[in-house]
Image (cartoon, rainbow, N blue to C red; front, side):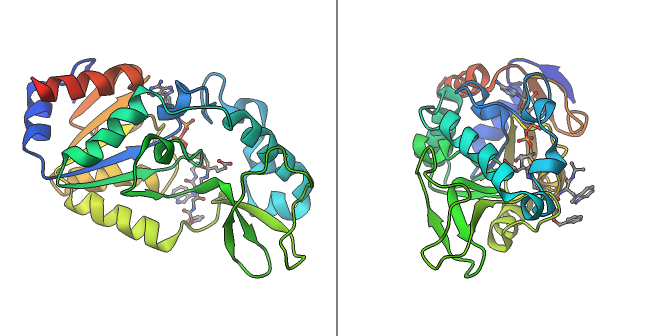
Length: 247
Ligand code: BJW
């Protein structure tokens, strides 16, 4: 493993010949759009206690507090736009014959950038789920007119987000595992790689022979495992990789 800013020749060759590419993203890809990350400087967990807000127990104990937090985040997210990093990933979907974007993000910015071949491992902040019927619906009301919001059936709604201790959506994680097993190259962008099971996907990809390229503002626990760790901003490095592929 080498820490560099520019893609190495082996990385370029791997991408040029790749038929099947998977991209795993985390909060860092959206940082340059103005979305706060979770960990590290300015991260959401610095000001809020995760166990008080992002667990089913927290919601059970105080749904109003949890919903107020999500309402605040939705207001913050609403005007934000995809950045250069999201745009490159959207174009990569068209470049490679087989492609899957696996995102841990709940902000919906990849869809705004144009990605369609994707799975959301941790849900979506613009969706709500009925606690009684389990029905999932879109909800873009910002700010919410009533906290906590209710379903047409009268039951309470919850954010359609995967909290700590909850299972990930079965289809999404199975599709992600398949992509990790089968991809020729995996790009791992802007994730601290500490939350399971998402953090295992680059390791699975590497074990199955993929060339794994990490792009992150800093070193992470997987930096020593991947083939290349590119340290810098995703919004700078991804366009640079795209440019290299055109040369
Ligand atoms: C830039 C940049 C720029 C900045 N350019 N880079 C096995 C072992 C140990 C524990 C577990 C285990 N299996 C399961 C667990 C428990 C738990 C877990 O992993 N805990 C760990 C913290 C230890 N996992 C779960 O509970 C999961 N469920 C599960 O596995 O169910 C089965 C099970 C349960 C219990 C036990 C065993 C099995 C569910 C995980 C749900 C995660 N949900 C959250 C919050 C949702 C709330 C919300 O959004 O409202 O999802 S946690 C939070 O972290 C959020 C994110 O998606 C996730 C990952 O964070 P991410 O994206 O990596 O962001 P950051 O902030 O951490 O990192 C940003 C990175 O970007 C940094 O590295 C920066 O350097 C970088 N960066 N600017 C490039 N411009």
